Structures are given as C-alpha cells and as structure tokens.
Image (cartoon, rainbow, N blue to C red; front, side, top):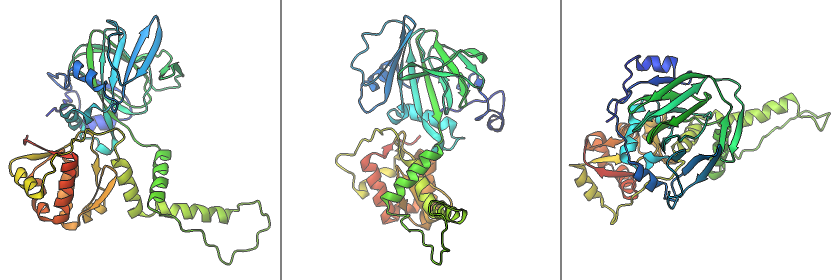
Length: 383
C-alpha cells in the first residue's frame, strides 16, 4: 500500500499550516512511484461511454476541448495535447488504493482520482479549481507554476475551458515521478508536460449550501416529510395586507429551522446525500448469484474488497444503533452490530475477523450477500 512520506514536516503541521490555506510541493511524497495504470489502459477507459473523459489540445495558439467517448486517437500529433479521465478509482483497483494514502482526510470529502496523460507540451491551461487536489506525478516530468490567491480574472478560452489571466508564481518547479503537489481551492495553477507524462490527481471537494439544501428538499419530497403547515390561531388583526411582519417572518423561519434542528432527519439526509456516488461504479454482478452458505465458506479464506468509488458512511449517534448509509441508502442493523458496521465503512478491505458475529445475524448476512452479488463488495485474496 502506498504511504505518503512527509519528510519535511509532520502530518499535523500539514493540516495546521497548508490544508485549505496554501500550496506546497512534497518532494518524493511517494518514493519509487510507478504508474498505477498504463497510458494504453487509460486510453481504453476513455473509449467507454459511461466514463467521463476529455481531450484538450492547442493548435496555433487556439485551445480545443472535446468530450469522450473517443473511438481513436489517430488525429492527435506528437505534442500539445492531454487526455484527462475522471473517477479512474472507480474502474481500477490499483488506482483506488491511492486514495488510502490520503486517509487523514475523511472520505466524504473525496471527489475522485483523475488521471491525465500528456504529450510533450500538453496541459489544460492556467486555471483555478474549487477543490483541494494532491497531484501525484507518475512517469515523465511536468513544469508546474502555482500563483497566490487573489482577484484573478477568469475567461473562456474555449466553451469547455475556463482559464485565468497570467499570474506570478509562488511555486515554480519541475516535478518528477513520486513528487506530490498539493493545491488548495482558489490558487491559479498550470502544468505543462516536458515529455510524455502521467499524473494522478486525488481531489477533495465539499458541497455548497445550495447543493445540500437542494438535496434536503429532494429528500423531504421523496420521503413525504416536512409537510406540516404553519398554524397560527388567535392571530391579531393585520393592518397592512402586503406586509410580512417580523412575527410572521420569525414564524416562517422557525418552520424551516425545525427541519434543520431535527438531528435524526438531518443525519439521514446527510448520510444519504454524501454516500450517493456521482460517477458510475464498475459493478460486476455475480453470476450465478452466491448463496449465503457459499459466501460464508468463501470468507473463511478470502476478504471482501469494496469496489472503487463506493461510498459508505455512518454518523453519531446513529451508529450506536448500527445505522449506515451505502450509495444513498439507509441501513439499520441494530446496536449489537455497530462495531461491524464501523469496520464496513472505515476499511476498504474487511475479513471475517472484522465482521465477527454479525455474519450470524440474518438481516446483516442477507444485506451483505445482496451487496456482494450486486458487486458493491467482491471477494479478494487477503492483503
């Protein structure tokens, strides 16, 4: 398993001084790092319709961008182009393991692992991201420039490319295999490939208030909740019909606030919303489906590995009742199984020792069997 090496400072110092505050180049964060997927395999993924991919190139100073899937790459030259593929951790177990190196950030913040292959001179142009990213350099070299936060003008260099004006760099460096460049939101940056190169970007993104409130509204509608109307008996006579006065405003806000103050409801909303996967998963259904006794027998010698990109979380105090959220669905297994549920959510690979007596509980075993047959977890040799 890959382990991030922070030789110049501690993890605590990184979180206290750099995370979401300023960029930093971590030389040899992954010593002896090798590409986790080949360029040909990446190009093959970009041929699939369910996988988000882009080709970005520049010809005679003009930027071009096209979305996949791509049938072939014969029209590309020897330089000035980049292939970008999103959520490769959903499709490659080796790439998914890279996420574990950044387990000091909770997985609900994880976006995906984006991989780019660039020909010499290739890049996506100077731009600003709204998320945190650890750019892990694979094969080849790239020249990275990172500017400071500020009032940077952004413009459309192409309908699909938002660029920023030239900036003065606070980091100006060539990165090689194993180097890791961390960039928080809001810092302009640009990477240009010096030769054929690969980079592996682990992105972390939070949700906006509008996203969360929209998800809350959808949840209330889908579950037929929050339908109570305002009741205001013994109201005083209103003198101005067009006026929403202070007391009415407070009453309306209190009605809305009562939803946000319902901890059990909000836990279900947050757990369901944050565990829902944005990108498709590489679910390999088991055919023919396993029976319960077959799964139990297999677990004597094999582990269960979570498929890349699957999101499963728990919250306090619901976990005390064995509640978790898997790909947007709520599951309650009871207080006696809370430790098994914690293991299920906290570890990508679990074995019979992690699950213990939970496997003797009919509801848990039935649900686990369903997940395995759907491909959410799959049998794998233990690490």
